[in-house]
Image (tube, rainbow, N blue to C red; front, side, top):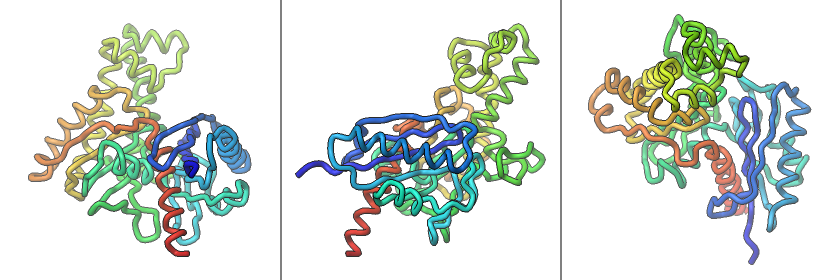
Length: 324
């Protein structure tokens, strides 16, 4: 019997990553697409085009697709209610994609699916209570409570990036109406903003030299310079890591997880970010939670969303067959 395959699609604030995945959650063919500056029709075209291209590359029958989007989702109708960084408000995403692709399409929040991947087969395998934080253009989140993915009453829960960690902080990005959100202060976007400010304060640093040379002072460059030993770049990553620790402390106090898994593109900084986060957690969280919880890097790194989307598709098909 030929292997059943699914397409897992992870949509971030600036790019799409997708892959052909088998029933053991092994990744086969993969691709990426930029989505910068696209309106809703162009965005939907890009997503559908990527899935169709992967179907053409797959060495077997593709039976479904799962898609993770950075949006509040109303699971009662399958509608993307509001996406902070993308034009997806009011879109019945799953139904539209299913019609375009002539496939069952299952959709969920991108943070939920990254959490699902890490819990199913990654750093959180076997955990009963786990928090996932994805540090990228924005900050995604996911919760595993009592061994199950928690979505809230209608599917819009676990928006951990929009937990306020500074009530007098800067405005959040995109469509979020709040101030001082975790996302506003510790995302990849925030990292870039703090790095530019640090480069201006320290013009003789490698970070300052990069700014003068007209290089894009963003997360990947800051991480590279920090790994090379630039003090200004290291200080920026430590600042972001400390803010991550502030957020984790609150999450640990609320949920008492045994594990916090941190993923996303910003995690290229590795222990330079996690060490100050753990230190801040210890300063702020309450016992016994702070003494029991582990803060670890994600196993799937930037591929967690794709794997989780594939797991969603496989779970969705199994549920449909169970109803039949």
